[in-house]
Image 1 (cartoon, rainbow, N blue to C red):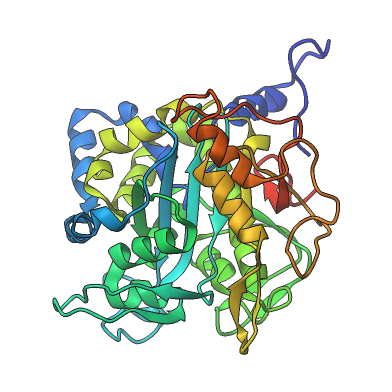
Image 2: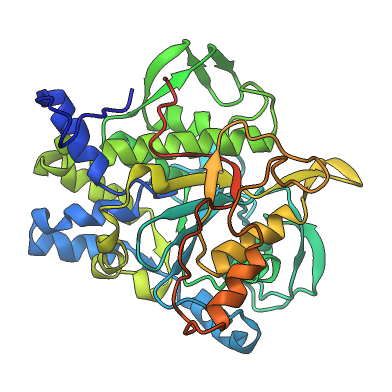
Length: 412
């Protein structure tokens, strides 16, 4: 249960309740639980700080490729709003990754999340993009320097043929949202981060016995180590309905639990546990050059510690089975376009569990009141007496999509 003790309740918080209140003050948004850990870096000393900063790999090739296509990229409508693309790579190369399959010399985006941070840092919205989504992939530069032609293909093929730059350009083409930063993490880095915080607790409705994922777990509350956590977030056939959508929702719940653990006082205030966690997190990262240091990451996240957990939101872009192949996905319109327009204009978005939707439009069967058109927000940000670059006032009720928040207890 979420602790509701607070000022004015007349209750005297217990030690556990006070600890939960402190944890709730920290932002809980990261798709990989990475960015927030830099907030504790000041406790590890200058020498360690420099080592941790050197751990991060700068994605210079992606920066050069994106610069080549700068004129084609979307413009940012709202000053200070940030969009970060978080990419989980399924690369089998590198330390500890070969055990998950043969190294074919390529890698795909096993998980991709577009994280939107509002300009005033009052909310964070993480949107999962299905790897099987059919999209237009632009011409991209291959690792060997040759170029591909434009193609209509699965979303995760963009990362396979052209890395992070191709993925970013594909996302921008799909959403018309400017991607300001990107972060890539691989299997080994993910495992190390979980192990560095001594595991993450999840709640399982049913036992899991998945030989492919090497995962056997009982029902109920379970603390997963790094290896188990990787199997849990990647498993498809043995958990839930076997769909990629179900898997993405499971990943979102796990990431909320991971960030909760990272933010807990027994990690952040314990140097013996803090440094290994920071070392694991930073060693796993490849980022755009502007984020490729602890200072760069800190500058991005320092203003987000006070985002209330109920405004840290996770959802999957409205999708349905592709009309020509049930094993692929396609966007549900106009719901997807509406979501993209809201994020582009830095307009409020709300999420709710078990939200009834129209299967044709993907929109709620009972639309939210107030501004019901995402495009109205974008127009307001451009004119009508309001200066461009300012976030429009929040309506009484923001448009709602199916999803969850970091405040929700999966075991409740």
